[in-house]
Structure formats: C-alpha cells, structure tokens
Image (tube, rainbow, N blue to C red; front, top):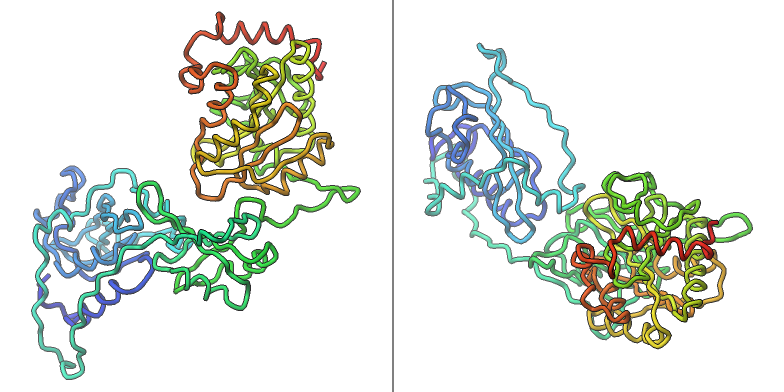
Length: 524
C-alpha cells in the first residue's frame, strides 16, 4: 500500500491516466483498482464497518486521487487491507458539483476466492451505461449517501508521488501540464431569428462543451441549421439538452437521422421538439385525423381528478358523462367556477380521445346556454404542463361566467399576462368548427407538447405554445380569471380552497349549482 510504489503501475502510468481524466468528455461507469483508496472509510457510521477492518483503514493516496478525478459510479477492488482479507460495501458517497450536477460512487471490496469465513468474492451489477441515462438521474444522490471521504480528508492538496525508476525509463514521456476544464456555458439563440417550434429538434444528453458551431457541423449535409440554444437551469447549472431550429419542418424531420449516434464521443438522442413538430398521426376512417389516446389512461390513486382515486372530491361533481364530468372547483374564484375533466387520466384536450373532446364541447355549450339565461358569458382556459412528479398532468378545463363587459376584456387581459411573462399567442382556432375539426386544429398547433389555451365567450380558442424547457407560471390562468371576475383575492388556489365559498362550503355550493344546472345538463 505504498504511496510511491506498486508493482502493477508506474508513476508515468498514473500521470497519463490523470491527464486523460482531466481532458476527455463523458462519465466513468466502473473503476477497477488493485488497492483501496486511502481514507475511504471516513464518514462511515461505526456500525457499518467490518470488525476486522483496521481503523483508520490504510490505502493508497494515488487511488484516492484517481477516484476524485474520475468520479466513477462504481469502484471495485479485491485486495488485502492491513492484513485483513474481507468483503466490504461502503455506503455511497457524493462528489461535489462541477457544473453538470453531483455524482455518486459506490465502493465495493471483494474477498478472495475460497475465503475461510465464506465472505463474498463475487458481486453482480445490473448496469445501464451513463450515456444512456438521464442526467437528472445521474445527479440524484442515493439514499444514505455521505460526502466524499477524500474531499473531507484533503485539507491540503495531495502530494505528487515521487518519480521512481522503471525498466522503461528511457521511453517515458514528460509529465503533461495539468489541464483545467472551463465551466460549461449557455448558448444564446440569435435574437434576429423568430422562434418556430415546428422546425425544431431537441438533442438529448448533449456534450457539455458543445458549441453552436459544433452543433451546426454535426448536422452538416443533413439539414440547414438556423438557430442553436442551450439555456441554463434556474439553479445556475447547464441544461443537458440543446434546442436546434432548422430552415423548415421538413429539415427538422430529416435531422432525426442523427438519432442514437455519437456527438463529440458522446451517445446522444435527437427527437422532434415538444411543440407541434412530431410526425402527423395516422388517419382514421374516411381520411379523418384520428388522435391516439394517452399512453396510460388508467385511474391513478392520489390524482385529484381521477374519479376512481381516493383523493378525488366526488362531492363537488355536478354531472358525469361517458368520457368527461363537470365539477365545482374546490378553490373557486367565483360562484360559477367549474371544471370540465376527462373521466380517464388523459393529459390534454389536444391528445384525449375524440369522444372525450366531443363531450367537453357539449359541456361548454351547455354552460354558455345556462349562463346566458342569467345574462352572463362563459370564458375559460386549459393549461397542459408535463408535471414531473406524481402521476403527471390530468386535463381539466377551467370555466367561469363573467359579465358581458368583463368577457370582452378576456382576450386583452390574457394576452397582456402572457406577454408580461415572456409568452405570446401563437395561434387562433375559430369558432363554429366541429369537435373533430377543432381538436385537429389544436393538435396541428401543439402536437404532444405543452401549451396554454384560452377559450373566449365567442368560442374562439387562443393558443400559446410553450417552448420545451421553459417554466410557465402555474397560477397565471387563475390570476386573470380572478381579476376579470372581480375577486383578485382568490387568485391563489391554496388560499381559496381553505376559505368560505361565497357564504357556503364548497360541497353545499356544488349541490346548489348542480340543481340549477340540471335542466341544461347535456348528459341527462
């Protein structure tokens, strides 16, 4: 376990490996060494240390430095430590963030074969290569992880090993200069090129050092690149993906030929952008567009909108159809605030089944007739955001009845609110179309991507396509509706859900609204 000598490698071997680790791109899946790293047991709770292990555990400072530089997912060794031949699995430890997120290492030492006390001499791993993994998974610390024992122990830089003579000393290369890798930088899209979501692709698992020029060269001969962007995350770290805009949508489709190839030595994926750039879906009978149902429409326990879920407020349901239902909003901004919701767990009206969309239109039409009898106009909105937690987004269309004067301001107020947050209305779907035509127009605009949709009193729909990776203010729709309804204090859902509902509790108000709406209910 000498610091300066080991019969398995020379000082030039060490320097060459360190230089490679400092300059090459990519991640290290497995590191195999013939020695333990020094101080690897530091920070391990006493109850998890083997009885035969000397304290402090001996080891090699060279191996400790290699582990710190390579940041492997797994470090395996099989050696005698301080005279003890044992099997030891250390709790995982994390390396500090160098710009691409933290990384974690699991240290495993195997006993020798035919161990006298039958300690484990084999260890099976079921590995997916780092290049095939989502960067967010790589940067998630495992349960029970400790800080890196080497970074804690290193109060001063580790000394360089002394050079030692070798049989091949005449042929050894001079020691290379230490190389410091620059922190990854964002790529800003050109301001003079309008954003076109239908002509974009997303490069997944993109190399951290890739520049706009590298991306353009990568697609050379396949498609004409007009814009490249790679934003920073809100926490100041670089996104793992790159958005590339081409001359037109046909060029974006052609760029898919680069999917599952290598870019700068890294395996990458290329997929069409989330907003309206996916290939058209198959046509149904009669040549009509036939939207496919969501991948998993089964009820999800814990979802507030799945009627079969224990979390659903079924007392607030006003009407139930074959594919959708109508409910009073638990945190209503006004006494007329209702939700139109698919019975099954479907993400949006753009991708729900035709039957579900048709029933949504029936409820909207019935609500307009009901409230016009009271000299009020119905407006609404839908927000389709791909929620990363829980069970994902369950579509729900918010509707509120307003005075005719307030309803006329709906287009203006929503447009101003969107533009204030950096978004804009990218398309308008006219009224008077059939449900199938309306849904087809919506899908043409947004595809399977994220969007915000406003429903005007006239039946027109205003659509804002949300670029992939942007953060949309979840409360924007409620804020505008609350302002138009004259109840700005009820804009925040959590506050509204816990207060008095206009003189009644939510269940009582839902029952009264159900009774008055019943003559107009299209499901009766």
